[in-house]
Amino acid sequence: MSAEHLWERVQMAWAMLAGRPAGEVRPDRERVTRPPAPSEPEAGAIAAEGFAEEALPWMDAVLGFALRLTRGDRDEAEDLVQETFLRAHRFWDSFERGTNAKSWLFTICRNTYLHGREKAINRYEKPAADFDAHVETLAAVDAWGPSGKAPDRSFFDSLIDDKVIEAIDELPEEFREVLVLSDLGDLKYAEIAEVLDVPVGTVKSRLFRARRILQDRLRSFATEAGYVREVES
Amino acid sequence: MISCEEAVARLWEFLDGELEHVDEDEVRQHLEICRKCYPKYDFQRAYFERLRRAEKRRSERSREIRRDLLRKVMAQVAEAEAEGR
Image (tube, rainbow over all chains, first blue to last red; front, side):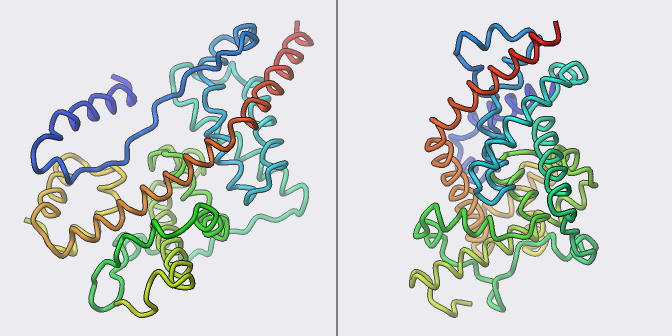
């Protein structure tokens, strides 16, 4: 049974259980199933077998990733998406049909981006070594001060989309890419590890750190806007 | 019954659907009855919902760009295939 089928089965099981009181508390990171293939007649004319059905539906997801990689530079992101799909098409024979085309496309997109940037400025910010060294200490969700009380969730709704995006784009690159792949791109830890070519433990430590930084930043925005009191914990 | 520390330590993995079945059950059972931890779970859920909403709107706003990109990619792919023949 493929991972996708397994996930669908799990989702169905969750739906069946949703009626019970316990159903309220459940993992609710629902995975995005593959969107439909483009309906344009030209798509059917593409000779590369399965490319239109398996790769093209992920164009929006790749665009979303490209936009955050480039910190919202639309022109650069669009070029990146085009280059990604052209490369994917060129190397389509090496893609194992039926496996995860989305992760594969994200990998190509990121490599293309890094390659272009290396050529342009010849540097890639390396993650600080100590961030990856403390998986355990970073595993816990922040305790939010001595009281350990979670802040009111309503402040998330007080923020406009632009502020949320701004906060994501402010993240250092090694945190931004892992967070975008997980929290916007909906990839699993193992898939992200493949895209970034790092161990799953590194994915977790970077991701959890990224979420903490982002949540702190969002809270600062909400505080500046007067939605959250300065000292709550 | 696992402790609050253990439940909170695994909260993100729980929400990400990355825990083994047994671990997932332990965290879920804890969250169902713990007044201290449930708000933390709820807070993190609100975080995911907020990001997902922002991404959904981004996607809705990108409809035109996407259509344009798709046309360009298909034209370039067709050209590459014609050259390859």
